[in-house]
Length: 525
Image 1 (cartoon, one colour):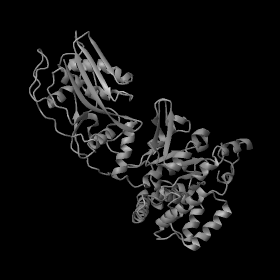
Image 2: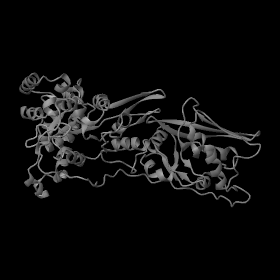
Image 3: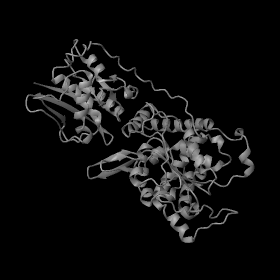
């Protein structure tokens, strides 16, 4: 009989690897086997491929005296998912002489339905990026994923609707699939036009102007947005903490092209992509009952969790102390290193986790502890246990702590014109970020926001005058700041200076930054 090789790829642990699909046909007892560590979905492809080929008009692979062996190389890498259906079908058609086609320089991915239609898959964007990097000229993806794939320039992307259309495109001459079927006439599909990077308008659930009062909290969120700092809001129930967190996303500037492709790729692999290109920072708000694996990622085969889905965006944890203690403590590494490491028996992975953390909490389980005019129904042991859920290392990693107090009833009926809009705040945030990025570019440092600056570079990136250093050291001794808190305070002061348009950090910028540091955890909660 004959032999054929077709190129494909898969995404595993957010990493893309090329897969070589080898198809061998020979005479012998009727058999159809797939080798190369296939999972259940790949094993079941035998029936999908056979039905799709038969219903397209070609002779079914399941014939008498027909032995088929499909090898997915490299053989020592686990193959997962239905994305190999299309390349395996193309490989069989070429090996069986039904499809005279040259597939060199072409890469195929897609799931086949029984009638020969090509279904969408997850992870197309990183697959196309890897195909371009590896020198492929053409990539064939499901029509459903074509717009996503077309975000990558420098490679021809073809959206495949069904196996019939693909056969007609690939053939070098008219072919007759079956004696009882009509000819497939050669024709060319057109490459999907490159999708341009356009940042359109975005609808927000909550505008800053919708939140009445809360000037201090709003200023804290503005600083957090400008510098990429983590922020915690605390106060009694019903004061607007959740509303402020939802409004925060409306003051963030859009992602640049590299960030957009990175975020889109992550969501594509996770099967959470709702649009061809994510141009704005994602906002993830898992419920406090979310499990450790749901937040951090994991499973028998490690997969990204909410922390990674919030990459380049916002992770909002409402009712923060109500989360499991180990879930809260799991935030230590990603908040410090911007990655989350997951190790399991079947593999280990490092997922990106560069996000802004926003938390909201009450002063106690009932929410009335220390609130004027309210009576707390919690016992002291309940309050202590509630506060102990937030460990010192987590407090250290949160840059701003701001109280959200009760708003006077008269302010709740004021019109929207009395408050600053998200658009106005976003402009200030964008200007501050541009100042920081330009400053680090001149210093030849790889930072975009002040929160990115590490301890090794902080002296060069954020120089301080003698007066500011003296005030900083006095404040550090008075509040007994750790080394981490000390550096975070410097970065926070630099962000305040950027918002105020100051070239150098001034004492007033430092004092404003200092008021957002918690003096004691008990007082903060």
